[in-house]
Image 1 (cartoon, rainbow, N blue to C red):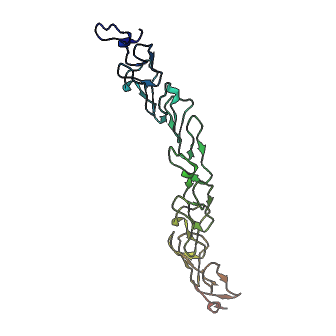
Image 2 (cartoon, rainbow, N blue to C red):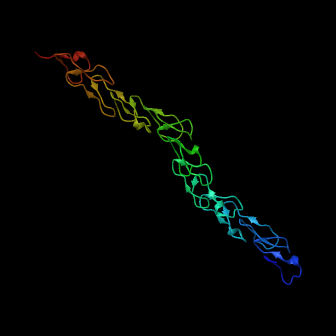
Image 3 (cartoon, helix red, strand yellow):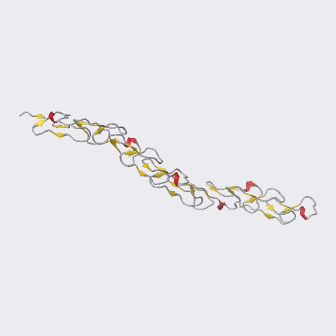
Length: 260
């Protein structure tokens, strides 16, 4: 019989047993193992399914080595007989089944298997390569939300957040301010009328001094003919008519009559 053989000078039809790669009763017809399966031994044994993440189109297949691994970043169930049974894993995408799949880019994700497109993370979030769920999209620095996987809002002016992920923004040190979406304490700079290093508490300009700009600059002395009796933000006031004062005057009584 086709796809069977017997040992020596056997006279019985049942002595004809199926070849490797074929299955059937002794002495009966033998059929090839279906694509996706194999059979190593001669005889009445059963065909064995190729393992998960492999396939074989060979018919008949006579060893496990004839089961070929799926392309990179794809997977399949057991007993698959076509390369198109290998579909993209979550976090990977391709234009068709049965080909090597590429990772979803930074800032995208894909939770389903197969050829579907990667989805863009919610606003104000980011993800790593090959992310498999929207929950992998976490707030970028300078943005805040109560949990991962949702749109994140920029930290409001006067606050900052230097780490990624869910969590609250921190308030800038005293005497400083920052723009919306600031991602570090060094974005907190002295407001006008205050002086100090960026990212640290700033102190108010003393009476007799002023500072009209933001940032780490020093306070300047009030010019001759002016005075300032308050601290912090503000400008120097002109002395009354026919009076003058020295540089850095901090009270109105520093304004004294000029000669003549």
